[in-house]
Structure formats: C-alpha cells, structure tokens
Length: 557
Image (cartoon, rainbow, N blue to C red):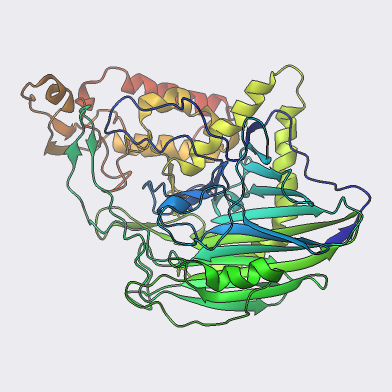
C-alpha cells in the first residue's frame, strides 16, 4: 500500500475537468423561477453510485449533501442539517507539530460535533485546494494547509456498455499522500459514517397528488430522517479488509422492505498501516468520543459495540488508518463506501428490485460484499473509466468546454431519480428510466428525451431500447381515470374533462415514483397529453434512431 517514490505520482486530473476552489462560494448563484421549485443552492458535486442504485454526492465544500437512496426521491441535506457525521478527517504530525481537520469547510449549525476542527475554506486571496469533476470521476486536491501533498480521487464503476458494475451502489475514494518534506511525516485518515438505515422511505404512504403554482402535479415526500431505533453497527475484520457494517431493524427477517438494508465503510489491510476503530459513537453529540483521541495522535479507542440504538438515539461508525511516510515517500489508500437497499417501493405495496440485486442478491445484506469487491477491483475500474475518457479527451478537434460537458452532463443518469429494475424474461437487462427533473417527478418525458436521450443511446444502447419498448407497450393501454388539467388552474378557469390515458395514444411519460412506473403512464396533468400532436412522431423518431445508431441489425426491435 505504501510505495517509496521520488515523486508524488498523484492522479492525473484532466485539464478539461470542471474545477472550483474548495469552499469558495458564489456571488450570484442561479435561483429558480417559481417559489415551489426545488432550489438546493450551488453546492453540488458529481454524484457517486451506480445507475438506479441510489446515489450520494460530495460538494466542493467537502461535505456529503446528496442522498438519493430512495428511488425517485430527492433529499439534499448536509453537515449543516444532520448529516455531519459522514466525513473524512485527517491527522498530521511533523516533529512536534500536530494539526487535525475534518475535511469539510462547513460545520453543523445545530451545535453537534462542536469539538471538531473544520477545514479552512478558500478565499479570493488564498486557495486551500481544488475540487474538480469529470463524471463519473471527481477529485479533491488539498493545498496550503497540511505539509503533505494530498489528493482524493472518487468514482463509481461507470463506463459504456457496462450493464453490471454500472448498477452497483458503491463509491470509491482513492487517497494519495506524499511527503515532500525532509522529516518523517505521520498521517491518519479517518472515515466516519452515520448509520442511515431506515432513513430513506416515504413515511407518507401513497400521498395525495397536489398541484403546484405552475400547474404541475406533485406529492409530499416525508422520509424519517434521524430515526435510528434498532440500528446497530459491527466491527468487521475479514480476509484482507477492515471496516464497519451498519444494519437496522427489519419488519420481517425473511424479506426486505424499502429503507431496510445496510451501509458499509471499508479499507484494505496493510502491514505498513495501523488500524483503529469505533463502532458506536454519537453523531448527534459534540463529537468528543471520536475527536479527543483522533486529534491527539490519530487513533481511535478500538471500541466494538453492536448494541442497537434506542429511541431518539443516533449511532455512527468510524475507522482510522495511521501510517508514517519518510521524506520522498508516497502512499495510495482506497476507501469504499457502499450501501444495499435493493427494494424500491412505488405506491404502498408495489415494489421493484434494483438491477444490482441480480448480481448480489435481494436480501439487503450484501453491503460488505460490495465493499470488498470495490476494494479488490477499484484499480481496474478506474483504468476503464480513464481509458473511456481519453477517447474524448485526446481529440484535438473538440474544445475543452465541450469535452467537460460531454461527461459532466451524464450526471443525470445517476442522480436523476434513476430507476433500473432487476432483469426479467421480458426485459433481460431490466427496465430503465430517469425523471424529467426533480420538480417534475415523472419518468422519461417522451418529448424531452427526444433531444436528451443521446447519451444513453450512444453509451448504453440496451437501456435506451428498454425505455422505448416501455413506451411501445403503453400505447395500447387505456386508463379512464378523470384528470384536472393544471394549465387551466393557472388561468383561474374551470378545467375541461380529460381522461388519464386514451387507448392508442402515445403516452407523454412512463409514470411517477409514487404510483407504478411503466404500468401507469401519463402522470403529468399540466395538459391533456392524449391531445398532443408531437408524441407519436417523437416515438417513431426514437425507434428509428435507436435502430439506425446501433448498426441497423436489430430487426426485432
């Protein structure tokens, strides 16, 4: 794990990646047009996680902000609002000089973790490092604070024509450390995580559909964030890996419900690295149960406690990896964060299993297996991603802004409320869909994907075909449910009568996450979609282009 090297050999960050100084804010960020629209502000980074597996996101401040663990649902919460325990932290000692920081510039606003020391944000005059993104990879480079040279490359196994690993709920953080000084340098990297099991499901089962001020339909999503009763953590030391496995209470020991499953944090063993752990600390407290020992010498108390959380209690797990670099020495250290929540529930009692469950099972007990697989394969995964990105990056005929956009605009395939179901006889690679957007939460709007679907078509054509087949199956269906046409509400007029889906009409969308996607279509009611003149043509064009751009050989399609 630790390599002697004359140079730091950091990861090569492509020059055309998007970048931003760590923690530096914006003078005038974009704001939404309607008060009812989702507006999380500008603090977003490239998402981490496989297609349809749920995803997380780490912002240019270093905090984890995006929590799309429940299929189709949006949670944007950071250290400011209850997720502060999910962090990377670093201890450094050179001679008698010690400094320790949680590697986020944003401390919680609720007085939790107040004993922790938070990384200084960049200013216009002084940079403390850079965040860069080229989806599915992103990087943090830390500067002008620590003596060590430090880079974190983070990614998930996303590359073209990949219909297995691209579905995995895994995030890899590969840390590179180098000692440029003339003295030995001791470092300790800590990853801490809250037990978030059972936090991500809608406590408001089958919520009523309402109308926004712009006439579009929506429903309330009410996740039980912070409710951890019955959750427990286990210290894991198996084969070549160590870490914390986080589990929770289940309604039935034989089946898995939405929200039930596991999280894991893991690292490989090495003879050059000391390992410390704490399997049950309090992320809702002042943080001294971790910070007192970690800030002193980079250690943790080696506490293994799998007692479940009581009512009103939250628990977290942490591991710390301490090592010493002599002058000129380098170290690469991968960390895996994984989750296993195989069930997505739509309307109450209507479920689908996620695509990755085809490979690891449907019991929601495979987070550790996923973590060890990520650590074993992360180097090969990163090389496949880099090779794919080089095919675009090496082209002299493309400007850098376009190279950047071609990759970074694919983020929506992960964080667009993505649905990718397990395989079936009818759909051998499963069914796939992304939301029109987080405000308009219905899947695969046909008119929008006419120009927005090329990335999926060119890189994962079998998923593109699965979307088109879903529209083809929906055309002959009929649903006489009466609808209120939202457009007339914006005019203050009475809505004319309309039905949800006319037989023979091409649907506008494939349904919403709170009903039954693919089976109940035309969720949007802003207009009477059965009357739209372009949808039939949009469908025919997308059938033909999928046939044409995949070699003109799939006659059955």
